[in-house]
Length: 141
Image (cartoon, rainbow, N blue to C red):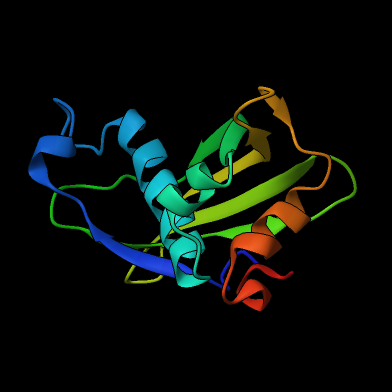
């Protein structure tokens, strides 16, 4: 999978900017989180259904690379891809790109699927999401 296999569009709102008129750094994380949930939803996975199954996605590590400023009124596409690997974790690769094609930020991270009872990562996050998805192929499963 590439980091452009799934995207969702967001418009920067004025209240999300800082005193310099730039998108506040914490909002980049919110945009990334929004795109991740939209990606899961597109694959047929709803948050309430995961909780009912006793599991939920967790973020273990996040890095943001800021490349260009974003201002109120800018429209961006936020991409998301899960890069599967062996073990309990997977990589999350995301790009925040203005609609004029300018890459504004790269967000990378490590995620897992938490067993909500045991409070430990499940052994195979792919299987947990595959079992919950109506379209697992969208997630590369």
